Length: 180
Image 1 (tube, one colour):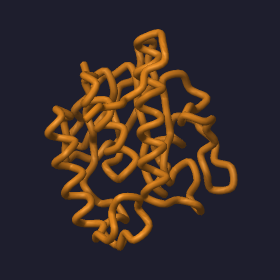
Image 2 (cartoon, rainbow, N blue to C red):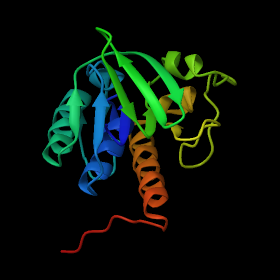
Image 3 (spheres, one colour):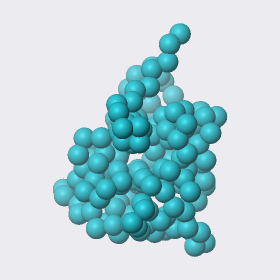
Image 4 (cartoon, rainbow, N blue to C red):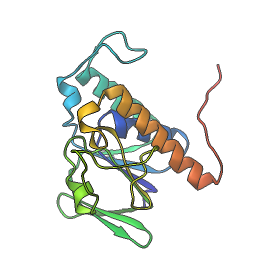
């Protein structure tokens, strides 16, 4: 059982996966690399002077995989809250269990709606750190703010959510800081 399942492999989902995997948390990312990043040109991403969204996706996926995250090119077709966490169903009917789920669905919020999260002004309402009203379920990136999304904001939300999960599991604040 994956401790964390991430639905969506854009900047938010991949950023969360990177931090979780780097800090030894079992994480599976489901997505078919169909993000709007492939239409983007990055000029406003701190530390990247210029890069196409497709190149960003390629580099990010490689980086996340190098830390041990399980990247599955599968579409998620359903999600259910259980007493122990969640059951995520992928195309073909395969079921996967996890304690936590991070939804980084982009502008498609079908799974959020399936779980009963109500949309307000096109957004899925969340608290800081991506917390939804359902315990163990986080919503980040474009889903949480459809009209004001940027890759760097989504990536930051993914990292912040990963730290929330890591801190909850450790029972204390966790940070990720590597020294030279």
